[in-house]
Structure formats: C-alpha cells, structure tokens
Image (tube, rainbow, N blue to C red; front, side, top):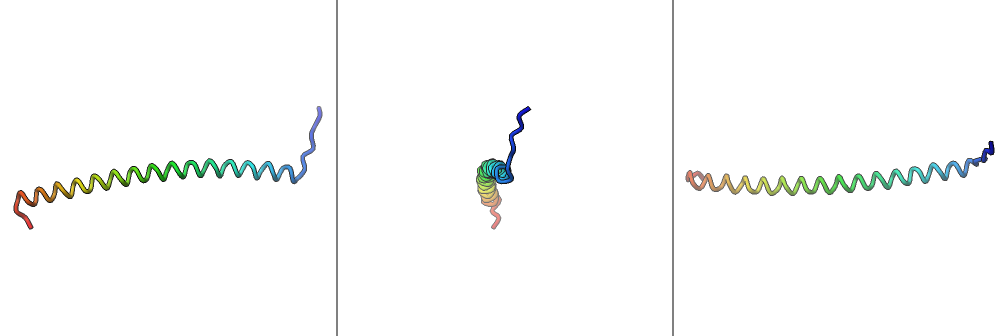
Length: 65
C-alpha cells in the first residue's frame, strides 16, 4: 500500500480550507435567517397597522375618544 506523507503545512491548509467552506455555509444560513426575519417583521408590521385601523374604526363607531 502506497501511503502519501502529509506535511503539517499541508494538513493546516486542508483544515483552513475546511473552515473556510464552513464559514461560507454559515454565512449563507445567516443570510437566509435575515431574510426570514425581515419577512416576519414586515408581516407583523402590516398586521399591527391593520389592527390599529380596526380599533380606530371601532372607537369611531362607539364615539370613544
């Protein structure tokens, strides 16, 4: 069996590339979470504004100040 010798420098480079790939994947996941968070926050904002309008309409109907 032919075993290839790996130097410490070569091994360090392999580990560094592995961590670099993991960082890229974490960045992609982080970006996805940011997009999801923005969508949720935008939806909540719309829902709150709609509820505020409905409360105002109810207050107007009941003549409450």
